[in-house]
Length: 77
Picture 1 (cartoon, rainbow, N blue to C red):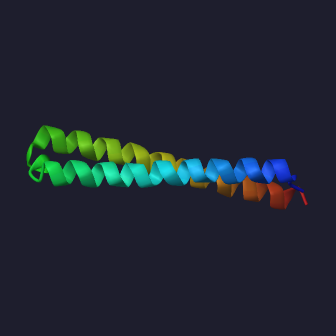
Picture 2: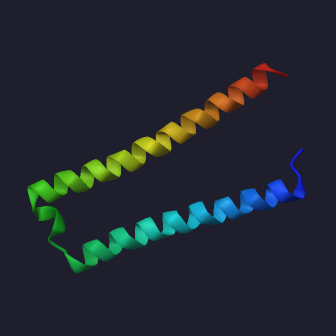
C-alpha cells in the first residue's frame, strides 16, 4: 500500500508530466502559428515527423511497460 509520502511524490510527478505534455502541445502550436508554411519545406517536414514519431514510440513503449507490469502482477497473485 502506498504511503502518504509516496502518493504525494506520485502526484508531484504526474503534475510534472502533465505540464510537460501541455508545454509540448503549446510549443508545437506556437511553431505552426509563427511559421504557417513550416511543413511545406520537405526537409523540415521530415524532421518534424521524425521527432513526433520518436515521441509516439516512447508513448507506445510506456504503454507496453505498463501492460507487462500488469501481466506480471496478475501472474504473481
